[in-house]
Length: 138
Image (tube, rainbow, N blue to C red; front, top):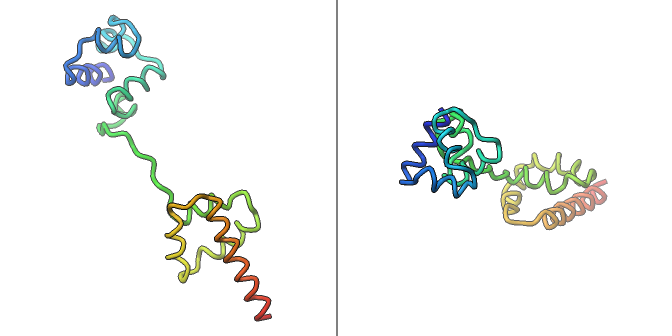
């Protein structure tokens, strides 16, 4: 399986075994053995091959027919804020209540391009306002 995929990728680029071997810094006979499924690359070489051909390792190994490399998913605003507050137990506890508030959802979305420290500052300000309101109500 791997051998056939490697050969197809190589020939689609109109490359010889020697050319690919030079790029990967291995012998052309090793490429030949890979393509005949008589030998398997080590993990490092497998990663190099995947990177060179811009395909996923899963594709090379036959675990997927999809050649594309999965892109890391972006955190949601709630996940990003949670990560930003992870080292502050008091703010994290406050955030766990705050994140359920519908009236602040739009504000949370505005944090997507902010640095974690700036997010922390905003949550501290909201906490200070909430604490002040609690003192005035109580």
